[in-house]
Length: 294
View 1 (tube, rainbow, N blue to C red):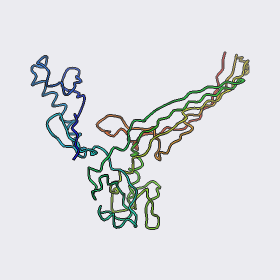
View 2: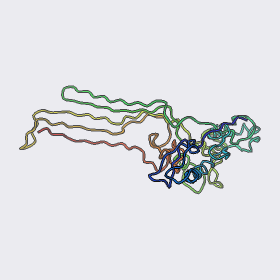
View 3: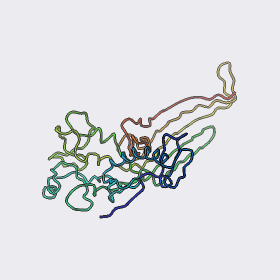
View 4: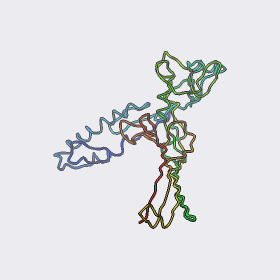
């Protein structure tokens, strides 16, 4: 069985020390007694900060605690199950191997051993885009001016928490309108509704989506008049303009907004690919105004 051993944390924040010191964990044993009384006392402070973090990450599937400071994951166990569609009536023989029934979520059996367990978890893309870019352009012609700003993020995978949390297909809750499975509608995207369950088995696997997008951030169109006169006031110029913020979004992402993300790197939001239900999506705004040059 393939295994790999990794250091749990590269940097440990040590509490209880003046100013809180960032330490590399593999340097701790080489420290000499100093302002902290003794090396043993210093090591105790490091352990007190390290242990809660170690216990937290021990909740991850496939995690095995070994000697203090090192941890073992089974290959692939630190990933997620890959959504393979919905079990269909025609799959009746094969689905019995996995204890499933028509209309259930189908998970890809990575090693084809006839069961779904931690060894079938894989890394489903990356939360970091392969490339990012932006473009800003301005055009002027005979008093007219046009400026456009656009940005793109391409190649990242996002966990759409909103879509899967509001799509449990149980009778007790409101639900997003989805193409769910029935015997007469053999959908391959969402399972059969079931009022007797809070969440479909392996329901989280439906959240991972391609998060690439191109967004036009702003478009501004203006026209400038010279020698403007406003009642008793005279000005050198008058510019009238209209601005549209976030007018266009091009993406295959089915959630609210691929640009919205949870807090990165915090213990309360371990998966920083998530797009949570509490995140406010970017909204479209149209503004009109005038600028007077005196």
